[in-house]
Image (cartoon, rainbow, N blue to C red):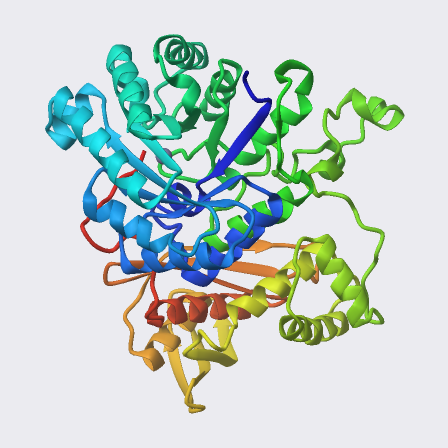
Length: 519
Ligand SMILES: [Zn+2]
């Protein structure tokens, strides 16, 4: 009997985080993990423990703190990887070790340089070793979609015999097309003798824009776990997008007859959080979570739309958390109203955090007439960016002189953790460049600005601007964020945020052993 439940395996924190420029610190990863738990994903792949001490710690902390979802750690089919994963997962309520090994001809010859028989032995031994630490073992034959189907059958059968409880079929390079990929899953169900003893999972990449389509074709053919990421982030063109898979299953229940446990009303909050923490913006026309995804949001009010909603809308905006709350916020709103509003927006803050956000809220309410939902989200984020327990420097006053035809000059004041305030003046090609140069003079760090963007996050002329920039120092790339009604101040805050991240010792992301690819 096939279950009608689809297991949602979220790999935002592993595959998503692994893509260049998306790396997050432990605090940020924990925040996303909490949001994923609220969303009720079934499995959180928290990281690749052997990849770096930061990765190990992140998996360990998520395993210790997060309750509800199963927590998975990734490992190559190597003893040290499996032992590191097992150790990082020790405190998890429900741990899973996810072991992967390349199986396709091209990977066998050029990556692992091993023959089929050796691969088979390695896989079986790895699963057996994992089984000593953990009942729940997932095995991924990497590049499965380009592996000879007969060999895939053989290895699947062997790892299930060795104790694998989930077999994940990755389309590692995004090569598959839906009919063929669904056929491959059917082939496994028909030819692997012990297939009933494991869950079939799929992990699709989006190189041809088919990751979601391939995942759904696999589900139709009998896969019961889908690996995906929030907003579809991930290496190259990314992974299957979680919100698209989930909403397709929900909206087309009539066709699939399947369900997931996801609390879809938290989708928007999670999407915004991931976008904000990784700096990967969501395109306007992105399905489900893009700004224009719902007709009412894009301001298109066709005649038919006004007469009857479902002439154009196949989903309810409120199902993904886009409900316009009737609670209007302004100058006279109290702390309790703010708390309610924050909850509506998916942020359950601790008292201390709430107090700080409330203080900022009062200041903003004096500056701005109307406070929109986006304003409040920015306040929450700002509070995190300026978390003093993590910061070495705090931005004080900025003064910028700008005149057409003259190099702009900026004077910046920074206060360091020991309470000392220093001021420096810098010139630059533009005012932002001048601000960054002045900050560099104080910190003594030589940084290169790789990318810089300012977005108006709210409506109106007095909108808050959010500055996002990427900074390179030696070989490390970090993301900085800042928001203010004044875009130059937002830029200064973003740059200081990036500097603080550079100075933070507790860094995460793959640091050792060069590139460690995953399935
Ligand atoms: Zn992947």
